[in-house]
Length: 254
Image 1 (tube, rainbow, N blue to C red):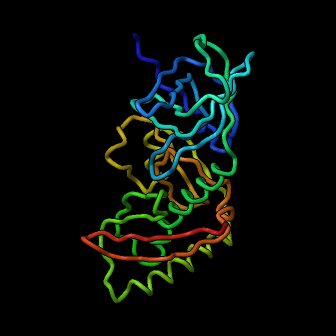
Image 2: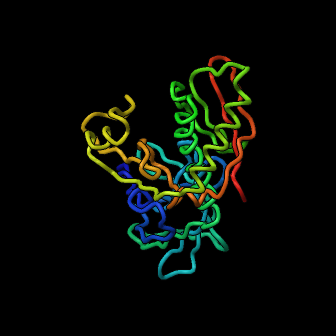
Image 3: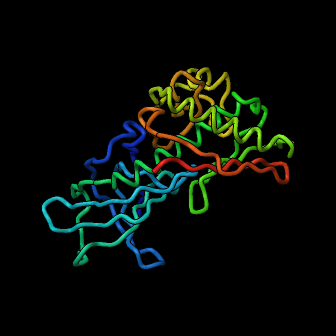
């Protein structure tokens, strides 16, 4: 059986899109009993990059079949939509059938705000004199959200820097600024990201670059707010250094 082609990522082109049309390719039963659907394209963001997956619904054209999407993952460029059929389970679905994808708006909005707030923290770290710390992973579930940095902050400075970070973040939020996410040629992307890109991005590729206002950009494949002000407000709940790493924990307004 031939492998399906890489899934086209509609949210990469328009990260504010919540509905799309796609073509059904195949399905299989996962080990946990859920079904996994593969489509030619998707507007559902899979779990990754510190961002939880979207949830929602997939409706099959010309039938009553509805598939509740509970989890979304990406493997080797193929997006897998895990979930269950509502009501009766179809015995067979023809390849090539049209489907309508509907993303849960409230979950997407929350995930986008949390994810954007993590990137905002990276900018604020530079503004409060912690730009020498190298951004590591962000983790927004289930114990998050937090952003982790390689490097340490002296214990005597932690509380002061925590207050400075929170003040700087909320000042930037209050001022606002349009958020951009564009797929760009490598050299142009490098310039927008301060003159270089991480080693994991191949030279000659076309990375997707996120920019919060007119600040330097960074490569990111996630979904984000349309304006920095959409984060509403931010609280730094804890900042700690351990084993050469600094973690910044935060919350956003509900």
